[in-house]
Length: 293
Image (cartoon, rainbow, N blue to C red; front, side, top):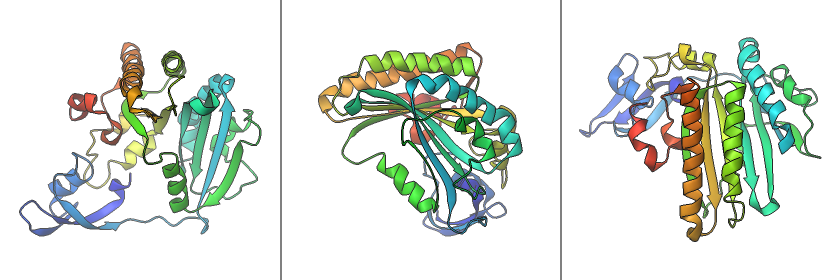
């Protein structure tokens, strides 16, 4: 979506020429820079961006909540409601759900991260997330704040500290509760194999792409990722496992790959798989499917 908000780029082309790429000037380069590849079409040296005024000068409404594992079925139901009826009524939200095993605590938890651009109150829950408000969190594990996007980014970055081993992998699917229940079962089986790994933090992240988001991605020359509004709503499935000891590389990367491939196979069997794979979340063994997607 950030790329779709760019009005024009100043770019150094492979020839060394400095050029402007926009919807009207060098439109092929402009579309390519929106995401159709891994940054080999030129070096962008500046951007002109469309901006959106925020209702609250102090920033965005953000909510973090942590739940015990028995709340997962209720969370899956709430996410489904949000992505069907809720999103039609409110287009100002974002966020993702995390299902994670934290080795140091020997606990498997569920976490929600919700952002809203126009909700102004930290004492009342935003309507689109009201389904979550009735689900009990762990003690002292819910917070609503209003803060600048830069601060939110720093908090998310802090969840991925330097110096750890890590593996990412991804696929995309069309949401339905029974399929996500199957994903959770596959994840639980995988976690049992790596619970004893030093420093293990093993999340599965579900990041929704609503139909109205896909529609917005079609502006200014079309969607460079091959996504259409009619494809949605979609969910990007991500594993992002972290650990400390290189001796555990083979075990953890193998389990992560198994979890992803089994879940992707389940999505295909249900007829809910989508070809798109977000390149920044993909692992090297997924390379062949990135550009075809």
